[in-house]
Each structure stands twice: as C-alpha cells, then as structure tokens.
Image (cartoon, rainbow, N blue to C red; front, side, top):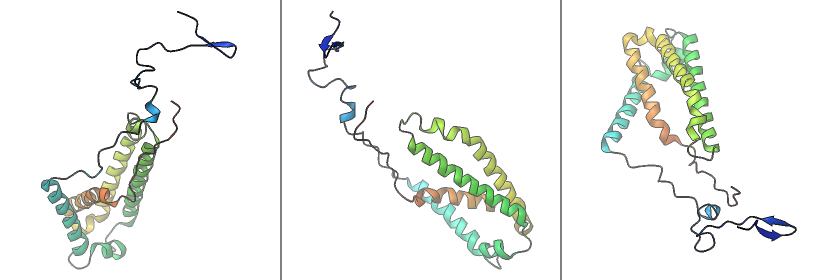
Length: 187
C-alpha cells in the first residue's frame, strides 16, 4: 500500500472500497444529497371507539360548563360565587398555566433537536416528575376550592374537565410542525 496520493506538497489518503466510485452505493458519501425520508401523515385514522370516547368527554364537559350548579353556569360560578375558596382556585390555575408552559417548552425543545433518538431523552424525561406533581397538586387544589359547591361530585367533575382538555388539545394545533431540512449538510 502506498502512503497516499500526492496533492499540493503533501499526501492525501484515498478510500479503497469496492463501491466507492462505481455505483453510489456508499451511503456515507451521498447521504446529504438524498431527500429526507417521508414521515407518516400526522393525523392517523381513529377508530369509532376513540371517536365516541372523545365525543363523550367533550359532551360531558359542555354539560358541566353549561349547567354548573343548576342555577347558573360554571363560568359564572367561578367568577361570582362566594362559596368557592379563591386562593386554592388561583393556585390551581397557576399550576395548570405552569404545566402548559412546560409542555410548550419541552415540545419546542424537542423540535429543535435534530436526531429522533435524542428528542424525548433530553427534554421531557427530566421534566416529567415535576409536571406530574404539579398536575396532581393542581387537581387537589381545584377539588379543595370547588368542594363547597359540589361536595363529593367535585372529584369526577374536575377529572371530566381535565379529560376534555386532554382530548381537545391535539385538535388545537396552532400550526403544523415540520422538521427543518438543511440543503447543505456537512456531517
């Protein structure tokens, strides 16, 4: 074997593989010239059971919001009823707001990381315990704040409103997130 090919006063090593110059089979050399693989379409088809569950959660939440305590609706009660404990209610709302901010931050952070194997390892796993504890504390605070109105029915009421938010959130995407593809890669 020689020491390389003479180039401009020095030697440059060459590859000596079978497929290097023949057919473009070497995946390492033309990886940047290939288009990125197509991702599966985001909205997958849902089964009728999933659709019925979603409709049931949303209908239950609409019923709770519209009928409230049978005298006035839920929104009016939250603003004007003196039976509600205000400080736990506001702390629960603060907890929900922080949870939403954490979800948005970890989602944006995951979109910024290019390798799919690293997406959820770095961003969301470290925040999951904090998000779970914050969500549980918010649930308890809401239950404590609304207990004087609905007593033991407060627990299923708050859980139903939470589940309605969970099934509605995927439909509220503000824009379709697509991974950015760089035309010139130097890896």
